[in-house]
Length: 112
Length: 113
Image (cartoon, rainbow over all chains, first blue to last red; front, side, top):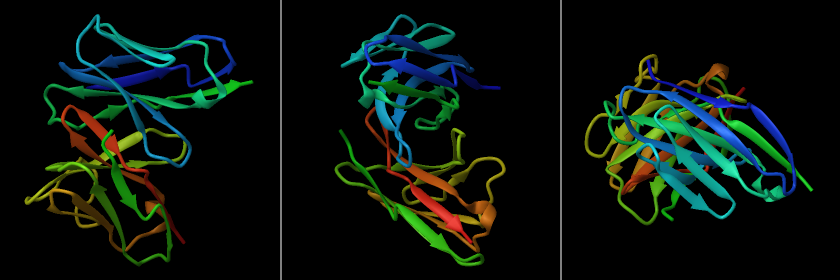
């Protein structure tokens, strides 16, 4: 059975304190791994898609990496506006495109 | 980036009534849209896949007669929660595919009294 596990559940950071979020996955053939950011009461905002082990993508203070078993989202020198819940999702190659299985998310709070 | 519009953002209804939620892709055509549900402090769970011009595909455990999906055009999918009950109260989110990315609407908070 496909599974997505995110850790930690919650993370409290000081402004400027870099850290990493983990997404471990078990899937029968990976079509893609997605990272989203979700603010309270809002829909997820697309960040990255990773397709193969060794791939890396960056956007401002965020960098996502992928191995065969997990993905990391690195937040470098975070600012308070980076506070959000970060969701990881996988799409299995056996599923139709767009059918994602989400992890429970990591809630990040960045304090000034 | 692509924009997906969802309406309404919040709805409160009485038990037994039906509620319709709209999901529109504003600047692209989406042959496939997806409907998710999210309970507080939990992750998104896929409910169904909406296909333009054909019947929706429902995930296991989701009642197709309760959650009616219509995808009448390439830019619009609707989810109707029929005879809503308090246990249907949740955050409903739609998504649509644009190229190799999946974009989400802003969600609809449904509260059934």
